[in-house]
View 1 (cartoon, rainbow, N blue to C red):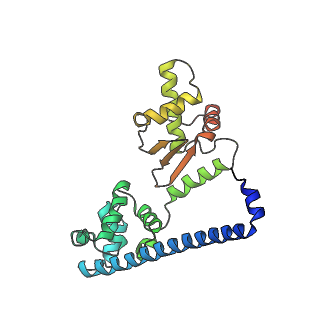
View 2 (cartoon, helix red, strand yellow):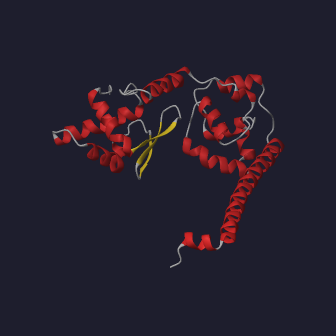
View 3 (tube, rainbow, N blue to C red):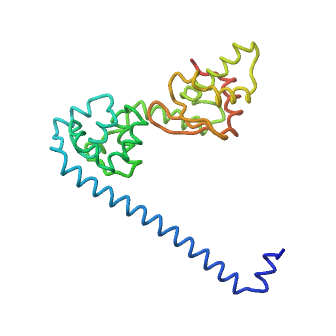
Length: 244
């Protein structure tokens, strides 16, 4: 077997060529990403033009005030509003390919608040109308984020009231009740991994796979908890349990 280091020592021109090839690959990947972003932007522009052609009219101020006053929007309503279109015109635009692609993501979200749909539009790199972009972050969301930030920067579980921590504690207590003794962290993890549905009354768990829990708070904040930090998290909760 040829030793790679010896080979390049004896053939420095090959090492130089290898580095050139690597640089070419990096440049190619960069160009592909740029092309993909350009194509996505182009498709978005075509979709907006097509929607404007098919939809009857743009919402006026009174209509926007009406929709912004609602507690939540359905996915098809949100897609229309994100494109500055009256929701009743969804039937006219639903067959546009770009709209269908967005709807695949939107239906997974279900009904969400106007602010959450604003964040959805930003994540999808849309250019929502000013009425949507001016939606302020609700006080309830800021309070949750503040609690979570405190918990992240503290050695004590000050964010013990977060939905995930309440969920973990609910699982721990269910196992304690059925076994009549405190379960190990691994048993709690296994229960979450294989049976989280029966404990997840708030429907926050998206997926448990590999070494992490993927979850989404009731305010649309998608987060994850790694297995490597689970034991210490559970230990802190045992010292200072959340209120269920």
